[in-house]
Amino acid sequence: MTFGDFLYFVGFQVEYTAVRLARRVWAAAQWAAWAALTLLAVLLRPVVRAVCDYLEAHCDRRITLEQLSTLAGLSKYHLLRCFTRQKGITPYRYLETVRVNRARALLEQGATPLDAALRAGFADQSHFNHFFKILTGLTPSQYRAVFAAERGEP
Image 1 (cartoon, helix red, strand yellow):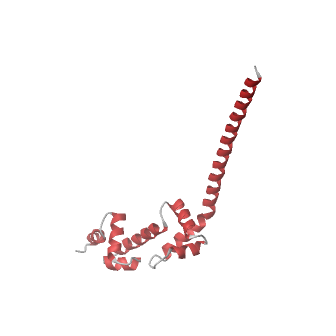
Image 2 (cartoon, rainbow, N blue to C red):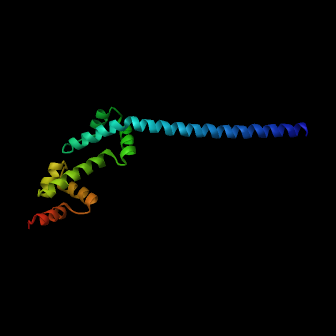
Image 3 (spheres, rainbow, N blue to C red):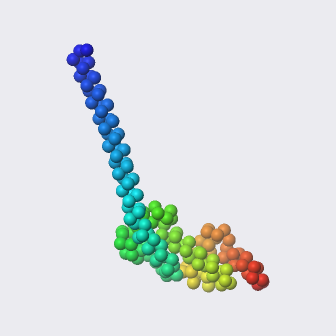
């Protein structure tokens, strides 16, 4: 083996070792990032639960993202990311779902759609009709009619 061949071989070995090392460092960094995100999600679970509890208790009021971020002690952007990562939906979509569920209970008891919309916290009936139909597949009047028929009402 000539000296040139030796240098080529050593250079190849160094490059191969550097690539292997870089791959291991990259894998370790990915694992560390995953572990950090998992730990953060576990630590923020009670914060997200507190936000959910607040939304459920105050769904009949106007709630802003700033109020929720103050409650959580996080920036509004970080709260949105954490909430969406844990619940799969945004805080606003969660609030809409809570409001529609409350309105469904009121409609089942015989409340008018307008009354159910206002008592559940929707700003107006058209906003309520839109989200109710998206989540249930029926208009509020159709949903109310199903339960009125079960109660024997016309």
